[in-house]
Image (cartoon, rainbow, N blue to C red; front, top):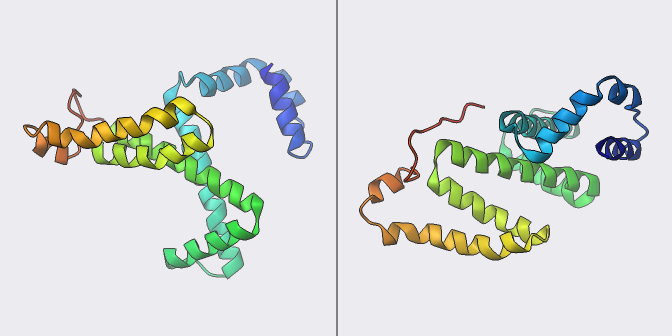
Length: 180
């Protein structure tokens, strides 16, 4: 079934043929795709998301440099160009949206890995509209409740306030620094 989906998807993208690659390395493709679908190999999955986000960001920067004719010296000019291109081109808007969602996912993982509680709550707030837009009803309904509960923790437990202000999760054993 996965092979069928891959062939149909790649066929829609302009006739790119993967028949020989799929047949010669069928087990490898199925294994990698299962790791993406089940997230059982988190490091590889996170790495793939990082590569996707970096590739999209680099393509945006290269397109900006080609359109403007110079290296972007300030982010304000790039952001104005990005908003203008997203308004003019549906394709650019789509890939820009994908990039923003990829970055949100990576920031969420970073908040967990670095045990940064304020970043965790801030990222959850940014993810709430996505759950509504993608029709994930349970997440859309209960994530705002979870955020409210997380924001009320400092008022409920004043004893460890200094630790919480440093951004540490309470029940963790060690801090894992974000390496990628």
